Length: 422
Image (cartoon, rainbow, N blue to C red; front, side, top):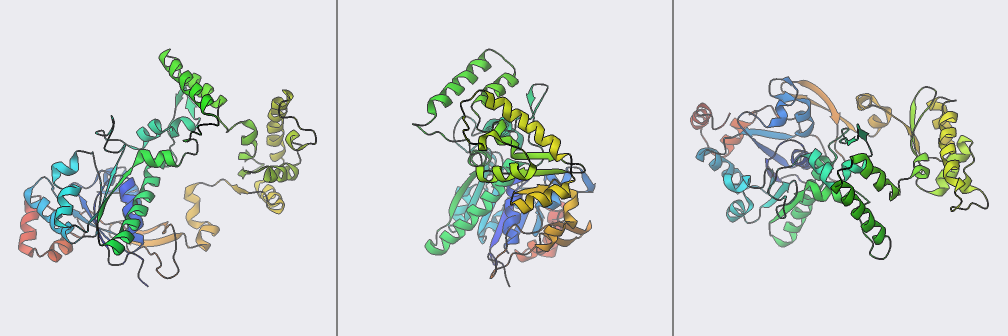
C-alpha cells in the first residue's frame, strides 16, 4: 500500500540536520524528495567521511531521497532548480536568512510561478528581531534558548552543551514534517499554497516546560530571579553563581531527583522515573526506604526535612548497589514502578524490544552496502510508512532527474563538463 504522501513531490535545498531530517520523515511517508546539493556535496557528507563524500551523519538523515548537485549561482543551475519547483508540491530550505533571495529561490519568486507551492523556510531565530539576520546552529540555540543552562552540566564553571543529540535540530525536523503535512491538508481543502516558517529557537522554547509565566502566581519570584541574574552578570561573577541562583527557583529539586534519576546497581545502571507521589511511594516501598514525606504528620516546613531527604538519597544509592540491575527491574516491575536499564545506542540495533516493534530497517547503499538503521517514527494502518531507499550518493540521480525535465543526454554531458551539475 502507498504511504500517506504518495505522489507528493518535494524539492529540498537543505543541509546539516534539522531540514534534512524533516525531509526524511516526509520521504518515509511516501513523498518523492529531490535534494539539491552544492557540486562538492552538502557539508554533512564531509563530516567524518568513511568513504569519499559519505558519512554516517549524512546517511542517517537523507534516506529515501534523490541527489542532484547544482551550481545555483550559475544561470543554468538556477534554471534547472526553478524547472523542478515549477511542478513541485513542496520546497524545504534552510539557509542564512539572506541566501534564498540572493539565489532566486525565495518564496516570493518560486510561488509566483507555482501558486500552489508549499514553502517551508527554516531559520535559526526567525527573520525578525535583532538576531534575525544571523546564521545559527544547535549549540547556539541551546545557549540562547535556556536549554544549555537548564541541563546543569558544568565543567570548570562553564556550562556544557547537550551532546547526546542535537535536540533543537531534531525537534525542529519533526516540526517541519508536521507543518508540511498540515499545509498539504489545508491545500486539499482550499487549493492554496503557503509559506511555513520554522525556527530552531521557537521549537526549543516550546519543548521547555519552564518557558512560562503565570501573571498572578510566581511572577514576582521570576522577576526577582531575572533581576538577580542580570546583576550577577553585570558584576562579572562566574556562571556557577548564576546557576546556583537559578536553582533556588527550580522545581527540579533534590526531593524530585531521588525518584527521577539513574542509579548504579551491582552490575548495571538503571533509570527510575516517578512523576507522582503515588509512584514515588511505590518506589520507596519496593526499595525498602522510609520517605518522611509519606509518613503521618509530615510537615513540609520542618527544617529537618531537607537533611532527611539528603540522607534518603544516599541510603537509596547504597541499597540499590546490593542487587543486580535485572533483580531490581524485576522488583520494580512487580511494584508497578517505571524503570529501565541504561543502554548505549550501539546496543539497540539488536535489542529485543526494538526489533519486536519493527523499529529497525535494512537498506542497501549504492556505495556503503548494507545498512541497518532506525525505521519510520510512526506507523499507520491504511497508509503505512516505509523506507524507500538508502541515502543517495552525490549525483546518483542526476541523469534520471535531468532526463525527466527534458534535457538531452548531450545537454547533461555539457552541463557536467562545465561543473553546473555532477
